[in-house]
Length: 117
Image (tube, rainbow, N blue to C red; front, side):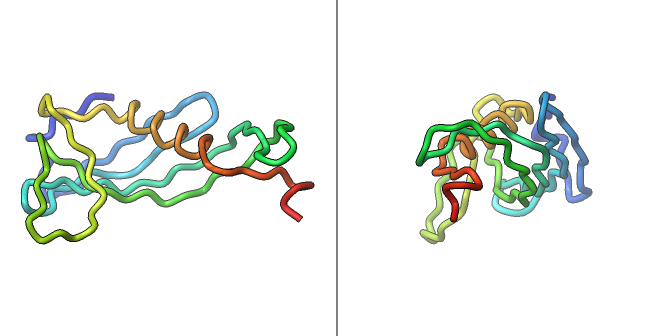
């Protein structure tokens, strides 16, 4: 799902994308300083590999996601720690953001129920 950034206003723009196992649902809203706020919920089930024993296991995911999107390079003069995704073609691909969130979870240290004890 491709969204043109200039069409995002102060009125929340809802979105929902699905992969085979996950749902990424939320909204985009113009915030300030040419930043667009993305607030969403990531839910579903992922097959992961245990970082301890290497066995595969299913993990239920239910996470709140929040970050900003910038049309172009984001320069923060206040040096505050803000999560910003930079887009360079005046649009954002929500499917790619979903894929990136899934890969981030997969790359984390995940432990199956028997190793989590």
